[in-house]
Amino acid sequence: MTDKNSLMRQLPKVDEMMRSMALEGITDVPAVLIKLACQKEIELERLKILSEESCQLSKDELIKRIKAEIERQNKPHLRRVVNGTGIVLHTNLGRARLSQTVSESMKEISGSYSNLEYHLETGERGSRYDHVEQLLTFLTGAEAALVVNNNAAAVYLVLNSMAKGKEVIVSRGELVEIGGAFRVPEIMTASGCSLMEVGTTNKTHERDYEDNISENTGALLKVHTSNYKIIGFTEEVSLEQMKAVGERHGLPVIYDLGSGLLADLKAYGIGDEPTVKDCLEKRADIVCFSGDKLLGGPQAGIIVGNARYINQMKKNHLLRALRIDKLTLNALELTLRQYLSQDTAIEQIPTLKMITEPLERLKEKAEHLYRLLVKQPGVKAEVLETEGQIGGGTMPGVNLASYAVGISVEQVSADMLESMLRNNSVPIIARIWKNKVLLDVRTMSEEDLFVAADFFNRLT
Ligand SMILES: *Cc1c(COP(=O)(O)O)cnc(C)c1O
Image (cartoon, rainbow, N blue to C red; front, top):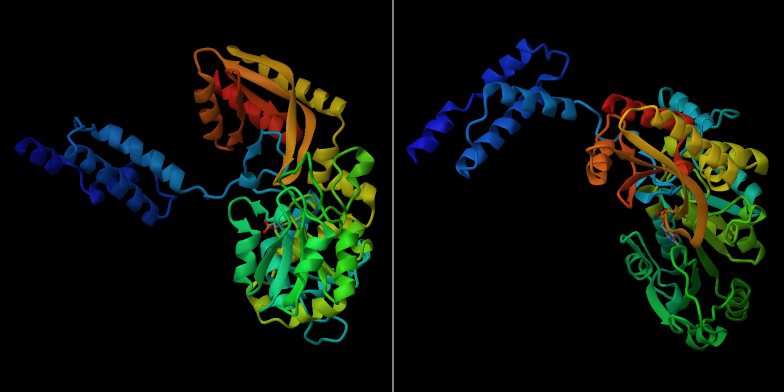
């Protein structure tokens, strides 16, 4: 015991360590961060002594640890990473990347005042929603449009505005959960509607909707099964059929489309996801979708359709709590503008460009990365064919053939290498496959290839 106590007494004080940091030349870091780092590392030592696993760290060692902690704390927590997974819409890595044009515009808008809610022609108060409504109606053929924070908020606002206190009929085959936090039944309850499940998991018929309609019914909801597919002995009621049922009973049909495809990817032989326009042509009353899935824009929820319902949503007090911020609005407007020409959209919107990138181009990119890496002594690399996904809970079952570079380093395990890449100053997120680290080039820019090359250059 006395031993422990004397070790405790020998622990340096925070002030003393702060002075040491000044002597080490750490002066351009906010003092509060230096203090927190000193407190944290000294506390860790104290706990180690208490649990009797420490044989007293040298002061030099402690200084080293504090310096490393200061370096960690003095960097922004949210940082750019290199996505080497090949998954284009990686939910954990921020889904869609925005184009250069969009980020430059965001830079300007963020540093200045803007006409966010101001009519430049009349000098009167304007609405933030006006910046994108016309573009959205033009691109989708809808009568009216509204945007909110994300698609979960969109579904919530739509249901609350159109069917509060009423029953909403949904097929059991479409009770979707997206990324753990968005579940159709829960969002429905939260929005003040009650869920009327009909049909079975694999089969739902038109009569299942028809037989369950009563005076309490407020709407029919179709949910796109964005992240799974039901295959085999199945039957789904089409949007046209639902619309026919809705019309017979004077009920609106709402379609939660999820992905919000605006460009026709079928022309590129990718997937069979319906576009927003398709859904409106099939006369869904309201369609809602995400801004940062296949649309390739910022996080947003977009609602398009019948003006009568959109006006109800615009008047809903909840809208204020779900409203989109000016930078998102700016990014969304610029992304939508790129869709005015489908060719520009495919060329400039990173999500679409990465999804439609020709295989031979990916092979060239992988060979480029390979050449940058094999120059390094101790690094073994090879170009490999891989299969990636679009991700972000979109287009399940669609595999994108791609190329990756498989890498191993002498004396370093694949797990270790993966962790070192992840802890690089620009973190590089890779996959492990058969004792190699894989960098899939589909999701890497030219600049990212050099970030990876630089990492291996410094390693050896
Ligand atoms: C992704 C998705 C959502 C949730 O959208 P967020 O923009 O992530 O809030 C809701 N419904 C469907 C069908 C989806 O695919």
